[in-house]
Each structure stands twice: as structure tokens, then as C-alpha cells.
Length: 485
Image (cartoon, rainbow, N blue to C red; front, side):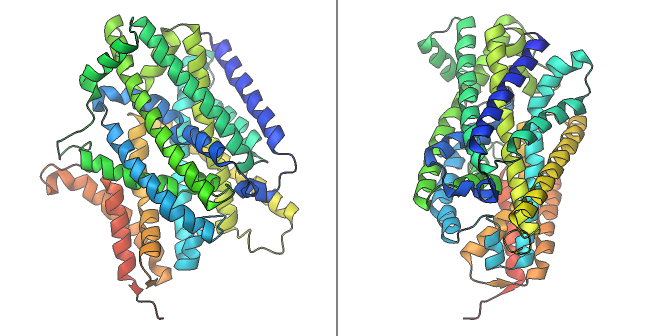
């Protein structure tokens, strides 16, 4: 597929998104930007969240990593299901009962201002890094297969993408994101299904032999029994459970879509529906990974040396023909945009509400708030640009592993704060909360760095998030006292 045709696909797809944006931003105001006027259809939110949750990381990192970790990633997906159930039955009813726009307002009401600001800070830190990782993996593919040949610097490629995303999220916010995410999910799933069909055809596999080949492959092993390994089943399962709670239920980006539904009941239906669809889609991505490695073996190809993230794009763009390349690019773009558009909207919303106090500022009229919101939106776009460029300089392994490693550190304090606020009735010494939330990740880092030596070869996986949350919880308990009735 020629570079010009690839760019044509990107431009055409972007124009479609701008069309959706035009239709959804008429008479848009700050209420529609932050919570979509609380009128979103639950089934649209559920469907669109598939694309927002999967992103380019799942699209390329998960299939590529099958060669190293087999289906061990699915252990974490199983844990997700329990985590999503907790979100649906505990967190969403809480957010609706308190009528929250920013979910971190709960921390202010329950624990105090310092706790509130600390929670919002860790969300912003987590989302900036996470969104940058997710967008990087997509832009990097286009850089390798298109822009390097044209001599375009990487930072220019990133800037171009961010400007397009900035343009269609600039006004509409959540109201627009719900619709664009649904569109992008459709194209991403079409790309996934078509890729499986095309590779199966190249390998001369019918449905029966396809299923048999995947089932008998040593790469289809799900459960890992070595307790030293990061992929040990309890580590992955319980780590996945708490990752789902933290990265979805305690994340403003994901929750602002849920709280844009008409009621808590509809938001619950959205979350449960979404979780089951996500389980199936992730399993198909893992199956695609086996097919990719079978294709490499059958054709005598060389697996990319730098990172397995390049495996899927290399095969799709170079070996499966123009149809595969076309749908791969469309699917990849569909995975990229939800990662950054929702992040920009959520980061802007959190900063405006949690740090600039939009809900309390009675001296700012609607026009003034809109002007400030636009400036914040642009500021976060520039920040994403910087982080992505820096990350490309240092990245050397699958982005999916990098993403969850960072999440273990940045979401841990959020997990501890919300657990303490929900599970106890104790009052904290609020001004010491930031120190506790900074200390917990540092202690976790030291433990993780020395775990092999200190614990007989034990390696932390995603359960590090649980330890981080527990250390935060313990620290909050230490600086708290019983509530006076």
C-alpha cells in the first residue's frame, strides 16, 4: 500500500469524524462538554467504550505479545469482569447519588480539599501518560511505513494527529465523544474480523481447522502456574480486577461517559454489556496473535527484532494485499482516536472543575468559562505531544507492558483514596494526604526493584497496583481518627 494511499485514508476518515462533530456540537455548551447534558443512550456509551478501552495498544501489542506470553493476558481480562461488576454495583450508584461531574469531588466531600486535589492530580498524571502511550503506538506505525520515507520528523507527525483530534473535540466534548467512539469501534472491529479472515485464507484454514489450530497451539495456554512469574494466574486475575476498578471506575475519562447516561440504572446496563463484549473482543485479538505467528512460520518471515508491536502492521501492510492494508490503517486510526480524544476531554474537564473550580466560580460567565476551557484543552494537547516524543526516544518493549507498569504506580493512590473513603467512616488529617499518596508508589518501586533478591525470586506483576493501594490505605488510616458522631 503506497504512503499516499495511507495518508488519503487518514484524511478521509478524519473528515467523517468532523462531519459527526458538526452534527453533535450544534448548541453545545459547557454542560454538554463535561457530561453530555446527561442524555447519552446507554447502548451507545457501552458500544463506544469498546474502542476507548482497547485502543492501539490492544490492536497491536496484544497480538504481538502472544509469542512471548501466550494467552496469559486473558487471565487479566477475566479479572476485569469482576472489576466491572464492582463499578456497576458500587461506584456508579455512588456517582449518580452525589450527582457528580468530576468523580474526584467525592474525595472533597468525604476526606477534604487536599485529598480531592491529590486524587485529581494522580488522574491527570495517569491519563497523560496512558493516552500518550496509546497514541504513540499508532503514530509510530505511520511514521515507520509512511513519513520516514518522506523525511517527515516524528514530532511533526504527532503534531498533525493531535491537531486533528484537537479540532473535533474542541467544542463538543463528551456529547461528541460518545458518537465518535461508536463510529471508531465499528471500524476497529471490522478491521479485526477482516484480518482474521484474510490470514486464515492465506493459511488455507476453514472455520473448523482455524479453531482446531488455535486450540492446539502452545501459545493458546491461558493459565500460568509459576508463582515467580509476573504472569502467574492469581497475580493476573486479581491485578486485572483492580486495574479495571482503578483505570475505569476511578478514571474521569471513562466515568464521564457513564455519568452522561440518563440514570444510574442505564449506566449499570452500559457497564455490564460493555464488559461482556470486551471479553469476547480481547479473546479474538489473542487468536489473531496466534494466526500472525503461524503466518510468519508458514511464510518463513522474520519477526521484527525491535518490538513485537511491529508484527501485525508489518504483515498487514506488506504481505496481505491492499484490502488488508486499507482496513488495517482504518482500524488502527479507529483505535488511536478514542485514546486521545477522550483523554483530552477528560483532562480538560478535570483541570477546569477540580483545579480551576468551574462549578464554584460564579464570577465567570459562560463565555469566560468557554474561553478558559479552550486554552486548557490546547495546553493538554501540547503536553501529550511532548510526552509522546520523549517516549519514542526511550521505548524498547511492548507498549502494553509499559502501560500497565505505569498504571500500577499512578493509579494505586487513587485506589487507596477511594477505598478509604468508601469503606471507612474515619476522618483523615487532610494536609498529610499528598505525602501518603506520594510515599506509597515510591515504596512500591523500591520493593519491586528488589523483589527477586528479597523474596526468593518473586517478581511483581499487576498485583503491584493492589500493594500500592493497600499502602495508601494503611497510610491514610495512620493519619486518621474516628469520626465524631
